[in-house]
Amino acid sequence: MIKVIVAGAAGRMGCRLVSLVRDSTALTLAGALEGRGHHALGEDAGETAGAGRAGVAITDDLESLMDRGEVLIDFSAPEATLEHFRIVAQHHRAMVIGTTGFSSSELEEVKSLARQVPCVLSPNMSVGVNLICKVIGEMAKTLGDDYDIEVIEAHHRLKKDAPSGTALKIAEVLARAVNRDLNQVGVYARKGIIGERTKQEIGIQTIRAGDIVGDHTVLFGGMGERIEVTHRASSRDTFARGALRAARWVVRQPPGLYDMVDVLGLQ
Image (cartoon, rainbow, N blue to C red; front, side):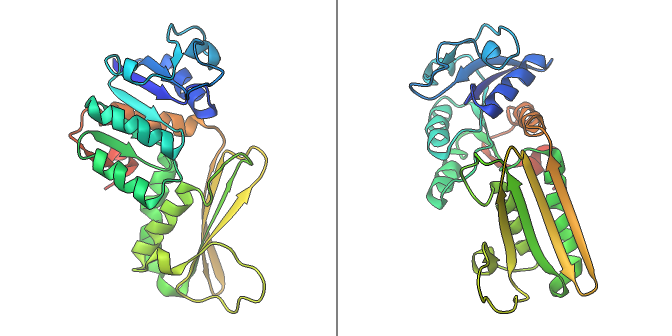
């Protein structure tokens, strides 16, 4: 049994992770972590998740959990994730990161820490989204400059970063496929008299509303036809199950930074 620690254990994603670990025959819950001062500290992680008593109390002390766990799964916030990763690296454990919204400097630190321990970093743990990322690159290469590229993403009203990490990953895949620099051609909003759309630009548009779990659409617009590839997540379990799959995989890997393409063998 692989011993898992869940960060953000009382949050929306953390609760699903705790529940699914409890149901797993390959994983066991070794620890549950929350931020300092969180109202759930001291509670049983399983009961907080609605999964029945787990015998694991939620704590804010990751150091105290390191001897119990083999891998930390973290879907929290960039600053907290980096704090956790530093501790994980010191103790030579594995890491699975689903956190989004990292700055360039924060990503550089993630890469540096991953030289010491194995880490899966992915803005989207869904098997379907990662398969789409594999397919859309080939589509973009084939369609070429004759088709305009747009990425549209929709999430719940509580999401703090925009565009989503998944939308940015999709846009990066598309940009590489057509030999463009996303920093130069990415267009994130349109308003007013903006002139004709250029052939090179890649649009990334954001919707925030209600309780949308996560929708992503890639649109290839040509003259006389439009091709759309859409992934809709109806439950956070989609991402949680992918993260658990990553956890089972990463504990067997040497130090390095991996993503879900590696986990799924889609290289």
